[in-house]
Length: 318
Length: 268
Image 1 (tube, rainbow over the protein chains, first blue to last red):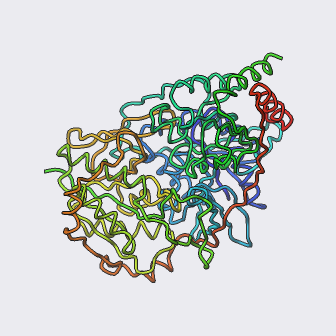
Image 2: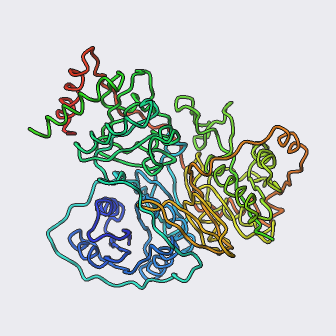
Image 3: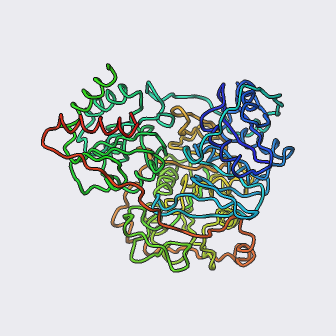
């Protein structure tokens, strides 16, 4: 059995649909199940039937205990379900939980997977390493194999009709560990979340100052996307750390990534390796960002950005 | 009074090495070192800074820096000593140089036990070479301690700690009591300080403890056999895209062409 994990939410997420697609590929004739953890778990899990998966739900506020409650609850679930493979999103929660879950079950973990294939009776997992400069093909020698998977790595499974499924409840455990959340400070941001945005407009040191981010926000708003920033722009204090895209920031896979005034340091490129189309606007035509871009504008951004905003505004109005 | 803090420093190939200079070694499974510099993993530098801040605040009695690796690990440990870490330990890996996180965590957990009376272990959230991000979490499991992930700031509070950490939608404040493993992520408040020249010179005279895997009561050959993962191959990804440059003297025309091409590519 392959078990797919989703953290919270009221409906099955795009990430889960992709993990289900991957699970189907890897499972062959084997069973696929979904476990949703969080307050609305039952509601979300009920959709799993439409994807031909069994469903399990563990309700309650697991978030308040860091990763501890997630690890303990999933470990208990795996003890009874005995999956050979567990797939979860390569987000901060997944990266924390996967190794610990694997350790508790006597298994092994692999993180940030972008490809997986069956090779006889083993699975070869591929993951970017050295900031995306290389890809490593990895096999795990223990079972269960717990993998975190980057967004966009597998085609999403198709929904087949609307059949819902009997959801089995899992008990939440492990909330007595001495680690407790006492305060949540939401990021001061509106609009679309960076990780979920299909379009991201990102700025770097080439912007020359914080003011230009207002124009980036306007462009992102018109496109229904989110604003990102390079490490350099964050280091300069022009954008908050939660906006940072890169190996040391958020790893994203939007359909369209517009990099403005970003040279393309390898740690930044590692964060956008999954982007489907990259557009680069940079006055230096030799900047490494053009090596990964589909479309490039070798021009000072100040000249072209107002016209770009105007063109997009016209497009949206038409 | 105060906690005994261990901070883990991994020596890695400089992550700023440009992609075009990156080469795979003849065995096809690891990078070629070449003349690239070795640095302390950037997230581990953030962890070291948090440990030193606890010492500044009187909450840490001792800070011990542990680094596993060959002679190249020494430079980072000297730097930690120059920044007033109390003790530096280098663990010789006896040939265990492929990146199995489970094995690394077992060796480092044994080293933490050998240091003795440790209250807090700080580790970078991931190392900028193999980017696995597993060792801190696996170490917590090895030690049977709770773990706080992606911490950016820490303050002593009563007999415990208040931690500020990165959370899905912003930041969270956690309360925790030692013993504890903390994985650290970067923040503008935990950038590693610079050592004074005089302290750098003094650090060159301080001892660095050298332990082998055998000194930790472990057998390197047996550990290699029990590795949880294996790298089959390391390959350089092909560049998939050929960039189409949109040039011209008229920015308005360039912008119009860009939007038209994005529509033709069905991106907009």
